[in-house]
Length: 466
View 1: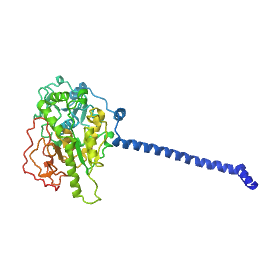
View 2 (view 1 turned 120 degrees about the vertical axis):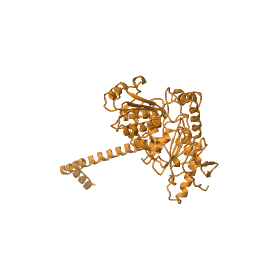
View 3 (view 1 turned 180 degrees about the horizontal axis):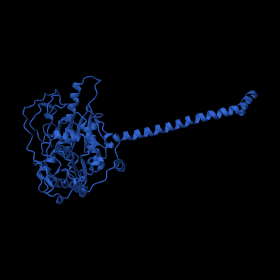
View 4 (view 1 turned 180 degrees about the vertical axis):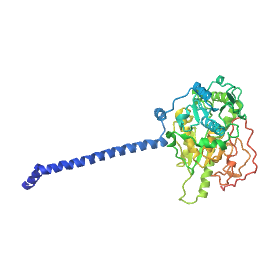
């Protein structure tokens, strides 16, 4: 014990040993600090991953949705705004004549009209002024959703008063019926001495306004990072676009009463009585339950084409406007449905504020990446998503439409399916193995549609065994 104590005391009192111990402690301290810092960084990273994964899996409360709206708003900075007076001054001083496109209605309608007008402007060698006024249909500016990278396009977020669009300076075309003087699909004849003013939610009736020219401009759009980092779909998936809510103008009354008298009155004022009636018919045909049999058929076909336990399951990206659709299809097809979570009320998920429009763009760009879209009738959203994801030469992603190709049939069209799946006639749908264009033959046109065109050659579809 004495010897042990002496050794211990000698070790403690030896100056040389004490110095060595101090040096050793100094060497160890940075390592300990580094270890603590690494542990803290790991905790932060795991927390961040948990929060990001919750974006897809956790419902948002009202306070969380407000916080997310603020985050979206603060993360995208808009360039200085131009007044309509400044826009007029710019055009009057310019040596070039402009194409002015005043886009209307929802996101799909606006992108369709914008891309068409941009194609015409490019063919004419003209700059374009995009008038994108936030309203009840799309209450978000263009710059909040897209990065502005086209040097030939200027932006205006308010309308130019019609009184200031004189016939001495502008030729005017308005497709927005039932506005006074509007003529939808009027042929646009270019006057090289005047600016062209085009107010529309539709394709311009001009040789260079068709989708085969406009497609490249909708595909050139670059979304803000908040959108691009949430694109998860790919070409192995099938897109589902379910549009069931009766989309009258979005004010406080119609957001609560989506199918009642106030919604119908608003729709009649917006689309006319016949347009409102047809719109309601198509929306009813796009109920999520009408998609179930078609999803089952695609899954069964996928199993036939890819036999064996090692095959990858077929997944679907769902973009819907009701919580009922998300819940119903997830319960019916567990582990097969991918979607981007957003705040939903009892009746709808399709809010038109800026946060809602960013979610809408996320869904559109995800649908565009799929190999086939099961879409909703009378919806430019399905149409634009299909062309956004097309081959770049004017061909869209193949699309089958609820109410026309499957489900409760509203308009059967010219091509009939000859396979019987369940109790209904429907097309055998996959990634267009027949190499034909029949799947894209008929696009919904809200006004003045005389029915689908006649096919030059009848197409037959091979039935799938049940």
